[in-house]
Amino acid sequence: MRGDARYGGMHPLGDVITLDDARARIEAAAAPVAGEERVAVSDAAGRVLAHDVTAPFDVPGFDRAAMDGYAVRVADLEGASPTSPRLLTLAGDARPGALPDVRVEPGTCVAIATGAPIPEGADAVVMVERTGREGNRIALADAPHRGQHISPRGHDIQADRRVLRAGALLTPARVGVLATLGLTSIEVRRRTLVVLMSSGDELLAPGETPAPGRIYDSNSVALEAVCRAHGAATRRLPAVPDTVEGWHAALDAAGDADLVITSGASSAGERDLLPDVVAARGEVIVHGIAVKPGKPTLFGRLGTQLLMGMPGNPTSCLSNAYVLLVPLLRRLAGLPPYRPATREVTLTHVVTSPINRLQFHQVRVEGDRAEPVFKGSGDITSLSEADGYIEVPMGVERVEAGARVVVTLY
Ligand code: AMP
Ligand code: MG
Image 1 (cartoon, rainbow, N blue to C red):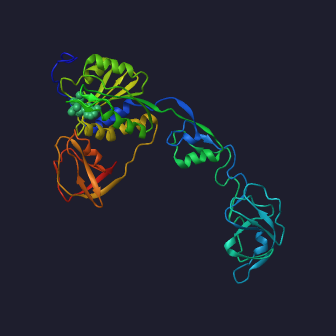
Image 2 (cartoon, helix red, strand yellow):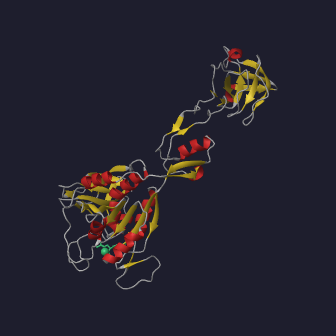
Image 3 (spheres, rainbow, N blue to C red):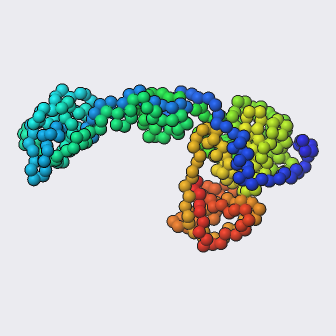
């Protein structure tokens, strides 16, 4: 360890690496978590399918009407048109939910509702708008082609075909497919278990009485929201005191977490004990990233468990949550990469940036304009008042007012 664990003084952050390098190292260290569980289809939205889904039957399971109208025989209506409609005798009707008990014989038709099975003998449906009725005589002004307005059996899904692939994100439409197949439960990838802990002797837990010099812990709550939004199951532990023993006890308590997320104690101050503790228990893979805000970020491994050490400053913490943690969470969960929306707008005020860091600068977007709202790394309103951020690359020190910029929206 570098110096005395508790009073060892400052230990400057080692070599910082680029964000791309950090991302590559994190990706290389993280594989989707193994394991699956069965959940109700009604609870499956947002989950990741564990296995391919093959259709046990055709959908629709019978030839069905795609329009309200009349089931007819094409041969009866050759040459029919608005100026020379054909008359057919109404032989009965077909409704959704039961097989029709009537046949369409030559010279007849059957009234049919959308979704009803096509009666035997019929080979087309004429939509009701193209017909007129006088008693049981129906005038039809349409010469349909064979199969018109009929969804044939298996048109949507064919029996024994794969309809959903393992690894698919269960969107509302895919949950709809599962329900269409009559399934009530489904195997999905298990959720990543994330254990979160903030650190710092100054932190108050939610609900604790305010005290001089103390602040409420916001990071673990905000980070938990990020984790849940990207498929993880979460458990929050009490804040870790700024002692080596406190850190060991907290990491012991993380138990079987796939990913431990800490905040604070990741920088170069004398209370920033996390890097040494991680090095003692496992491996530090990233420490120090050339971004602003968010330089004092750490990523490591404790046996099979991953650890993401976020900066304590709330804006640094959350900014890196978007750029580093979200991709990691999605990779662990087997979710497809996140593709946030972007907008090209005009910057209202100049933004300055350190030349040797990639800066994420928070902005509020109104119409075609983006107004910088970043105050400081310690100010959570830098993010709560922002709609997104612009990126100022390394090597660029100023983005002038009036410049066109691309905003990544939160
Ligand atoms: P640290 O990274 O531990 O040096 O903390 C940097 C700054 O962020 C300090 O001002 C801390 O008080 C503050 N901070 C650390 N953790 C939290 C937290 N969980 N919630 C709010 N502020 C925090
Ligand atoms: Mg601290």
